[in-house]
Image 1 (tube, helix red, strand yellow):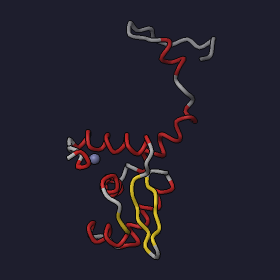
Image 2: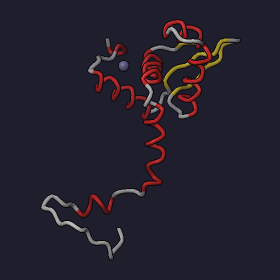
Image 3: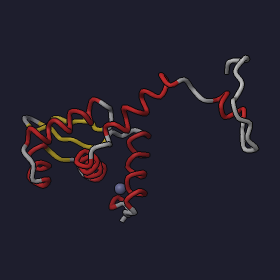
Length: 122
Ligand SMILES: [Zn+2]
């Protein structure tokens, strides 16, 4: 933190270390873009499905009652952000949540926010 910086107000709960430890705004880009991927209810729903099951675009689209191109668009965004991974088997491409700590944490977070129990643990 800038040595010459002084706060306009002084409050009892002020904690200098919190300000000193706070990364620059530019360092939050990855966090913001990750949450941006989950800022859409349809993408959240597809992501949560793929946390529990591997599926192809056609089945996801049928289940979601959406067109395949619309679902493919959401899957592309989730894949680019690293939250979803693919596996090719012949002509078929299967999607599932990435096997990463981040994807696992977001999976748990969605279930917590929605008060759902995880169907992987039944
Ligand atoms: Zn779950």
